[in-house]
Length: 130
Image (tube, rainbow, N blue to C red; front, side, top):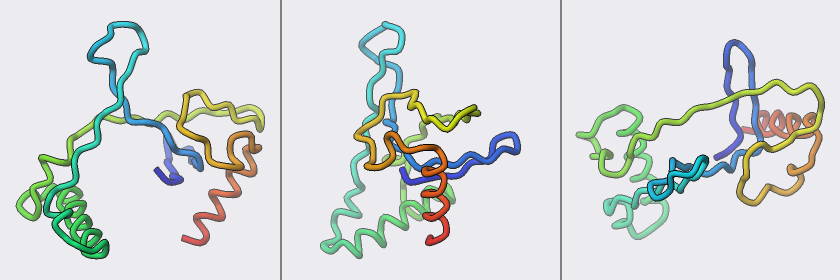
């Protein structure tokens, strides 16, 4: 997931390090905090049937369009785009030290111990060029 900006209760939150895993409570363990990865859906065969990447991208965009518009008559996304409840938490910090509260995948270079100002500057630069 790329950098994002969210406004919660009128406060702007920006991120530049988003590699959290999509997980759910464990189906095999009852221990507190045990989770398992949510399996990604398979790619619709209508996409993989295309022989070149450009056509696959164009077709995938149509699937995303159908999902965004909730129009299963355009592309029947319902077998591939399963709803998952997600939530976003924001937190105030009192200093410039960023402590990662969750285990993440491999941290991007230059972000694992960077001061908060550097991370925010990187997000601002990213937004300016996109």
